[in-house]
Image (cartoon, rainbow, N blue to C red; front, side, top):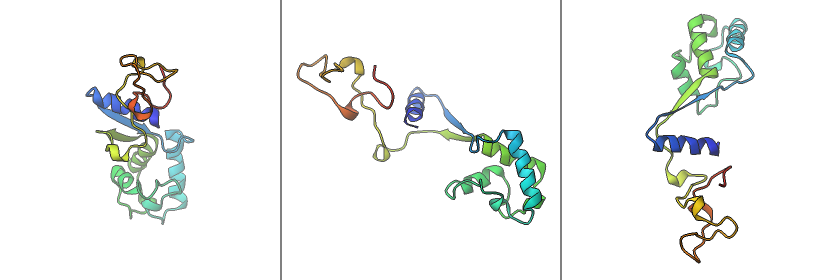
Length: 148
């Protein structure tokens, strides 16, 4: 996730848009999941859409998910139509999230500094520009998997 965060922030810094596509149930193809929903609908007709199955997203994501599916949460499974099942499937197999900005620095798990790696001796961490000046940690422009 840290690598993905770096890519997203760098992309936003370049002025481009960032959108993630999440497959919330990767064990199902879209077609298999739609079939699964039909089976659930047949066997749980009296249940409501919000209780459609055990895979309904966590409580924190459920309201967004329900809104994106454009189905009333109290709608009975037995009357969910094919087009609605397609929307449910699309939201489970291609849940899109647009990222517009990074979270505030106060919420950061990891930060990346501005001292370029090429300006530091990797053996001693001493600056190539200023003798006796050493860098470490989040002052350095490094995160996650890279050390160039």
